[in-house]
Image (cartoon, rainbow, N blue to C red; front, side):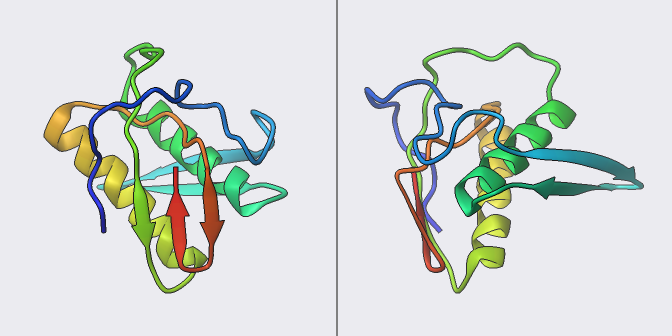
Length: 116
């Protein structure tokens, strides 16, 4: 799994290029020591964006910092594993850098790859 890299010149996070913003709905259940995210979306790209947005709401009360961007290139064996890899990456960035990933600007998504 690739780790976040230096900021680049792309638009701020949240500008999902494959789906309009807020093309998803979801909720969070708080269990002892873990969160259960439930997301519904018309596309895989919107589902990934929604999952990150829900996670960000739960882990941070800090306001979004427009223009703060990290690139990612995740590879896995299917959409479900890619979603786990995305959540793992967001958790890594939060714990390591204090960076809260509010959304993903999806450049490419397939069962084996998420790039944004």
